[in-house]
Image (spheres, rainbow over the protein chains, first blue to last red):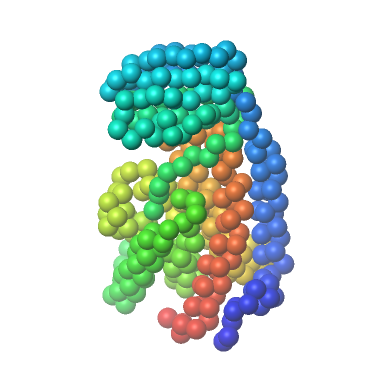
Amino acid sequence: MKALQTPGKLWRTMTAADRILCGAILSASLIGMLFARTPSKGSSAAIFVAREERMHLPLDEDRRVEIRGALGPLALQVRAGSIAVVQSECPNRLCVEMGWKRSAGGVIACVPNQVLVRIEGGPSNGSLPDGVSR
Amino acid sequence: MMHPSISARTAARLGILVSIAVTLQIAESMIPRPLPWLRLGLANAVTLLVLVRMGFRSALAVALLRVVLCALLLGTFGGPAFLLSASGALLATLAMAFALRAAPPLSLLGVSVAGSAAHVIGQLAAISPLLRLGSSVAVLAPILLATAVPLGLVTGAFVLAVHRRVAPW
């Protein structure tokens, strides 16, 4: 009745098939991590305002661009293969705080301004989606 | 979905089990997590217990009722979080039903791990077209799958303990 209070007892309770299943899942995920865990550098950034693509900026050219968001002007800076929102008229400036992005698939969003910057090029990326689910 | 006629005893039992599952899931949703998608899945333990003791239909009913009730209580009904949890719970129940019948027998620990992994796969399958996260899912999937093993073992150990202690019904 004092079942399963230590990892050792847990291990002895497992059948051979249990161990094979756990091993298979763990090795599959390990292989997956090896393949997916290489963030590739992006080649360009697509700028969306209110879901419409406005601009396509190559990341190998340093420049500063101003665009009009839903709330006001927003300044983007491209420098050394990275892009950032450097100035924005939104209340919390989360887009500015997101800082510099360079990996393909990387995203900078300014929700109040309805501006989305998405870095393109390269098959995979290293950024994790975040969100809340219960 | 349910058997055409079930006894009042079974109906009452299922009601109690659904409410236990709802309580566990809501309690769990209040615990802060390191990653938003990382969850122990104790509510799934109830599904497994019902699966072992009352069969597939009852388990499916308990799992789906739990998901719908939790979504209504937490205010996520119809939203992406609801879709995630519904497809995760559905796939986990199916996977555990198959795992229980596996040819070299799995213990409840292995069945729970299978359910936990299937839950992850169901969630990712539901979310990837929703958010167009194709490449991010490729990064997230192995991490979540790896965590599904220890979390599934913990849940499985819990189910084993309950199954051994609670008199058969």
